[in-house]
Length: 111
Image (cartoon, rainbow, N blue to C red):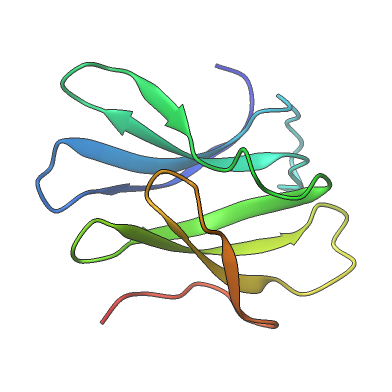
């Protein structure tokens, strides 16, 4: 599959994996990504859901972390040209209700 893959993590029940993939297929040694999106893959059925379909064009979603109850995902969204710092966002597990939490932040974790 073309495009950079990253940030794999499992849901608490171990039935789903959360990961990022640059769907543009762009690959370069400097690590730049053009359209990184967050995906959920069911390990039972092997189906994949792109939950970043509502993100703004020209940005990357990265570093996702699923909530302890499995209902929400916190992640970083940043411009794909590196012109601004990342912002901390949250959305529901299905990709709906995206909202910015912090205008300058990254790599959040549920505690």
